[in-house]
Image (cartoon, rainbow, N blue to C red; front, side, top):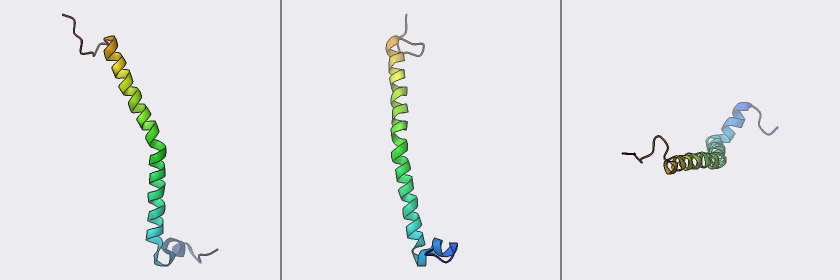
Amino acid sequence: MYFDSFNALLTMDGHGAFVWSAYLITTLVIAAILVAPGRRRKKFLRQLAGELKRSRGGPNSSKEEA
């Protein structure tokens, strides 16, 4: 193995903070890329359901019968 100990793996001769932060940022960006479409889809479906409810005259619609 390249590193003699776990501590040497974490510090990487003084470069550990940069390397591990780069891994963390990359992981967060990839996670955001994977999660964003699902969140957008849910938001779109909620908006669509609200528009359909309003157009059909649901109980919370802005159309009031006088």
